[in-house]
Length: 327
Image 1: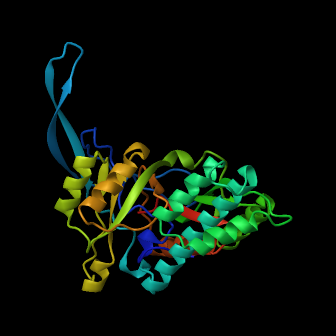
Image 2: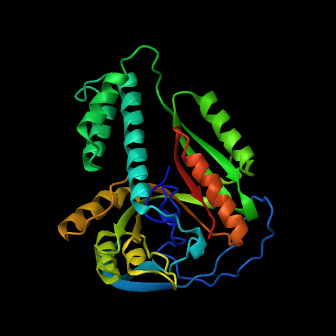
């Protein structure tokens, strides 16, 4: 399965850059050299971050007004790979991502109905999922079909699982699964990982390299960087990640890139509302991604092998997303 229009957005949920916390001053990082072997360690990719500041006032206990500076960073793009790693067929990738999203919403509907019944008035969990489905423009027939499916004999509730994997060149992957048959899903994942040269990692050995954030994806043709910065700053976002730039990009390539606004769960709705108010369209998504704290740079061969491994994992019905810390 796939996602956006290029390797960095293939529902693998690749980060186009490493998000930095806006409240911290930017620091310079050293590039660590890694060997091309399986390892749970990551190397740190250097980048520069442009900080913008805006004053705001905050009252202290003595009701005095103290000037405080709030910072939001716009990350310099970290290219997800060389030109050779681009994935053809952008339209097909977008359709696959949408189908994956619809499938996940359907699973969530089944689980909610199994636990609390089909009436959203009495089943608050189902009501929340239906609201999310509406926000993400999920077709009504998909929702209704899965409500009916939940009542079928033998249909079990779906359970979320996370599997951790080592790829080539010291790269780490996190595989998110929503399944009604755990034994089936883990067997399928183990088979793909083994067949395509990966290695299953112990629980917790990879997850600490990522942080979960709410992300809003905006196509570059919908808004420019300055506009997004002002929206993000006003709405309290943490970061704005620019898309990668390649020297041999065509105009079509550039138009198919996406900005990422990184924010907390509390501010997510505020960001969406602000974007709507400003007339900026954004990608329907579930809003949650794992971003790598650091990235690992690998050679062309390792990059192609990791790409193949991730594509095969995403082809599994139980797999919802694959995240990677590859640069």
